[in-house]
Length: 621
Image 1 (tube, rainbow, N blue to C red):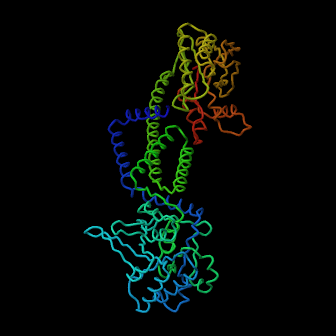
Image 2: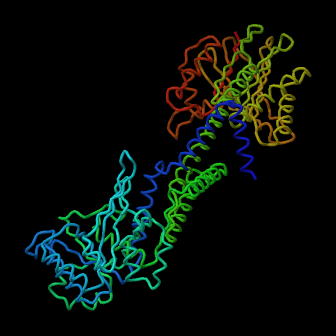
């Protein structure tokens, strides 16, 4: 597959650039991070909990609570209606139980701990009530503490007289995690051979098969249900005011009685926010009654390793397949959402955070590797381009040419590392001057190649004694065959007889040169001709023939100087350039070329040079 080949080539290039030791060191660091993620659950705990809470809060709105569970709350209204402050005397608790028993419930789970003795009459009345009703389930509290001697477990229970007469007794043990939130509860403790009150309520009051509780894990997530309002929460005060109103609703239900008044402070932080302890207990019973037995495998090493592998693999595929920076996170987000929905639907809470972290990490690593590769390649290409520019500069004449009181000089400023403008001049038989200027279309390497081809053709033509007309034909033929119409070139060829001072100017689609007369006037010399490299055969146009007087100059240039000349749209750029030349001081040929380019208005615009700038000047002294 191409992705494997891309990865192999990238690794090989990084090895060549950085060496083997840095790559091995980086791999060792990554392996260490992977080991930490797999064996240290706390390394991803903050993100794991956040994802769990977010998905659970959304899913809770679509879950229906089991209809057999109802919360009866001792709320602020109930406390305000009584004459006694909380905790109530046992007589009042007994009266509340008898009131609820009048609703004919299946059973009553009392989320109140009767740890200490009250008045003799009060304890006697409560004991008698629990015995007579026969369907009361009491709670105890387990407390686990870490001491210098190890972990100690303490159990706080109601008085034995109440426990002996109750239907059952179980502990309440919600697991508070490091961030202070309660997400799960303990179902049993083997050390004390004890079961939770949720298990006892499910086994004694709800389950048809009491043996099914043995299959429950020791720790279960509390699965909250909020569809349709969730588990009903009734006020004990409202029931006392109108018992008949709630009798049918509460008939054959499991009533969970507890304090939900904020003043008592029996509240805990959960994925759904702050919830009273009695509602959390009811939600634990509902979790069992509705069969939503989830599995918490956040800390399981196998699943953490599996999610890590999926994250690494998906990050590698996304980056090395060449997906864009927009598509890569979109594809992964859809995959992560699918896993989140899947895990919540099946209540198998896998360590998705490990996958997210490793995906982000692997994407970052591969993107950085590609960035380094591109950076080194760019620098290598820049160095190669610099070397190529040095070579290209050697193709252009560097010194002024003087022959029989004639002077020729040129100068070129490329827009990029490599230019497509070409100029040259030669002395032929100590009498004639051959002057040529060319401009290949485009920029960079292709145009530079056309320029090099032109130089080689001109040199070969000189060795074979080509005339200016024949040289234009040779340039056309070579460019056409070598570049297959991919590029074309404009050119101007000047042949000067330095003894008679006459010249012959051939135009091949190049801008017309300016004749700078010794009296300060300027005019353009027009000659018709077609581009080079567009057709197999070349038909030259009629050349312009003339002569120069002492002090006259001919200025050839590339079209970049004209096209980049600032001015209004309705102004003629050639006329603006002509006016610009009139303002330039008359300097020696070499200095005049430098002056024209250095003071071109575009140089002061602050914008990048759009095209190559080239000037070529011939003067009769």
